[in-house]
Length: 298
Image (cartoon, rainbow, N blue to C red; front, side):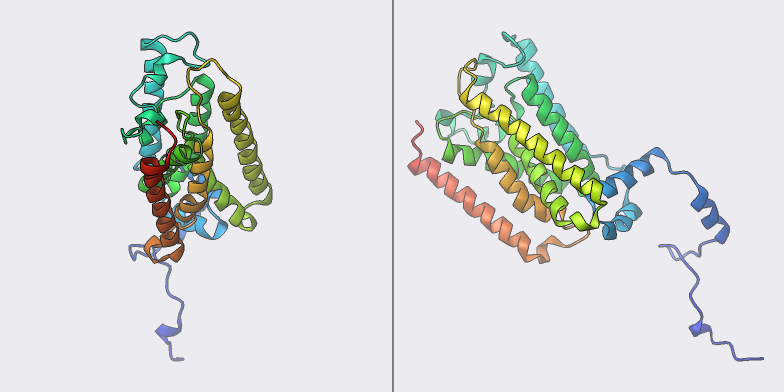
């Protein structure tokens, strides 16, 4: 009888717990229909990740915990809008009136010493079109992003965009008020857009083109409404700045891109992460000093 070398044989396939796979079970799994949650996760992986990372995501994917950050933020923004539209009735819902301008949440240049306003303005919106556009976009992008990445990462990008939006507005449009979550929404858009462009070749071509085209159309339309509210519409008591859009999208294309392109990687070892963080901190410090010593605002 020939010698039988065990070490030269191919190892039996095992799962992550070291248990051997059974051929019958594998065949059954191959014919098993995917559930709704699994189908959704496969779709999310195609939209959010390049091909070489999808299998790793699907191994770990589950719906627990749910995308709680973006859902809670959206509920909070909707609740504040309903409060000012219903409990403090307005002339019309399309463009709210005095209620939002006297709100302690709105960013106003003369009240910038109340530091919470640099964040809280995201809960106040100028009308139905304003809040619907923001909520739809942040849910469409935020839920898949939070399923793939951690809620902490999505929250950091979103809030970085909100703060960058208000600080940029205080520098480049220092006499205007600011309402809406556009800074946070544009941070998610900026990070997702950069990820879509950089990973274009690893995505399904038609899907990649659709993603980029959809973002460009939305951004163009939303910027159009922002310019209208700032320079044309006189119904509101104060002019609303649109600079937060620029601040948010720049934050997204830097910090957001690093977070959303670093799936299954250690950010602390990535020099790009530290470069973006240091750059963001320098911007924040400059904006704070500008608002204290150089701003023309009252």
